[in-house]
Structure formats: C-alpha cells, structure tokens
Amino acid sequence: MPNNDFLNSFVNENNAEYNILYALRAQCDSKNFLLQIYNIEEIKNLLSELFSYISSKYKSYELTLFLINKENKFENEVISVPKNQSLDTEFLINQSQRISRENNSYVLVNYDTNFFLVFNGEIVNAFNGIIENKNSLKQRNNEKLDINHLEEAFENYISFKRYNGCDYVKKVNGIPKVIDNILEQTLRNDLFKFLKKRTKLFVVPEFCTSLSEDEESVDVALVDEDNEMAIIEVKFFVKKGFFVSNSTPTMYSFVRFKDGYNQLNRYCIHLDTDNSYDIRYAYLYMFYACSASLEEIKSQADKYYKEFFESLPEKETEKFRQHYKKTIFDNMVDVEI
Image (cartoon, rainbow, N blue to C red; front, side):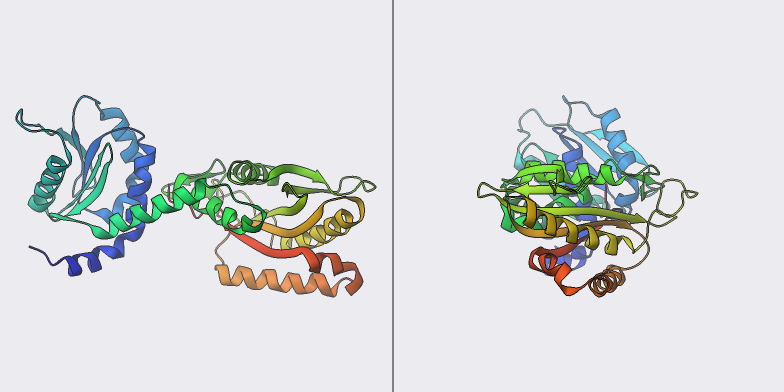
C-alpha cells in the first residue's frame, strides 16, 4: 500500500490540474460519470475537447467511465452494477480504486454528491482540500459584500473569471487570447454586472460626477444605504500578440495608468463639490494582457502615479489623496477554462 504522506506530497504538485478538474464539474452540470486520466498534466490542453466528448457520449441511464488514454485520446465504457449491489458511495470508491490501481492512473468520480479523485488506489487528500477550500470560498462569494469589502469583491471577480471564463477571452490552440474588438465598455459592463450581483450596494454604470461639467462620468459608482460611495475608473491595455488575431495591433499602453489617475482626480473633486454623497473610496481598475510580470506592471503604475502628482499643484490633488484607495490589476488572460 502506498505511503499517504509520500503520495500527497507528490500529487500536491498538481494543484493547477486539480483546480481544472474541480471546474469540470460545473461545466458538466448534473452529469454523473467516472473519468480515468493517465497524463493529468495534459488536462489543461484537453478540457474543451473532453467536455464536448462527454456531452456527445453521455447517457443518463448508464454509469459511464470516460477515459483519456496514454495517447491522450478519448474512450468510454459502461460500468456494470451487479444486481445485488447498490450504486452507492462504497461502490464508487471500490470501482475507482480498482481501476486506478490496475492502470496506475487517476480516476475522478463525479456522481451526485460524490466528488473525489483517486490515484493508484488511494483517495487524493490534496484534491479533497481543494474542494473544501472552493466550497468555503463559494459560500463566502455568495455572501453580499458591503462598501468596506470591495477589494474582496474584486478578488472574487478575478477568481470567478479564472475558473469560469468570460466573453472577452477566447482560447486559441489552448492559449487564452483577448477578442480583437475589445472595448472598455465591455470590460466595465462585465465588472458592473458582477458587482451588482455580489454586493449589497446600489451599483450604477457611467455615474455623472458633476452637475456643471459635461461628459464627466465615472465608469462605476457604488452607493450604500448611508449614501457612502465608492467609485471605480476602468482602463485597459493589451499588447500585440495577446489578441485572437496575431495581426491586431497593441491597444493602449502603461500611460493608461496616468490617464486613470487624472480622471479619478477630477471625479473626486466634482463629487465633493456637487453631490451629497460621502465618497469613501476611489479605485483604478486596470485590465491588462502583456508579457510583463505583475511586479513590472506595478512598477509602471507607481511611475505614472508619481508623474500624476508631479504634474499638478498639491492643492489640486487634495481630494484624490483623501479618497484614492488602490489600483486593481486584472490579468485578462489568466483563465483556465
């Protein structure tokens, strides 16, 4: 019998693959099946094909074992349930252990409330830990957040997209790419819809920040029952090579950080002057897709943040300094589905 500590230390290396298998359950809705995998590290490249294969071959009246074989080809077979035996948790455990032990493979069990992974005859505890964490996170995500927990809402939004995908990112040869006709409005609306569902706040797109200045509207405003407000300015930049079409040129650059800070500065001044809302927080939400690391991007943001302050008298940035909370960095192509 394999040593569990050694086994779990080995399979912990596959956390990314476990997350993908977790996401597969949501994609397959109420389908019940077993899935045998030889090369688990290839699951990220085969997921969309696997989902299509399961959808085309699935029969609700049978217990099917789907298989990704050693050549990464798809197969399936029906698992027979003896007349004197129930299709219960014990049966599923015994079958998955037998199959995985015979072939030194992984077997994912997805049947009603049973959802677990077996490797070489042993239930993978690391996968169970991911399920517990995901379920806990899901429960927390379903709790509507208030104005003081917006950064948690942003994290939930980024995590949701990572494991569920989004309309403005498509996979090309297994690689996430941004659609060619991406618009700031598309990104703003996607964020707006998520925040509207996941917060306790009144969420308004294109909120007019000034009674006297035309075309002065912040992308998203959120207001609580005490008239406390948070505002979000949405910007993006995408480098050539990160679009679906390789010929699509770069859209915008790091300068968008400075553009965003300048706009937030104006909105903070207007809201303090013209409105009865108590503005609490101002965020710059930056979507991006490029080869630079997050540390490099943050360094560029800091550079333009300093340039923004240096370009204006201190008095003109007073309201911004009072209300600005943070810049949110959202890697558009950090998607696993």
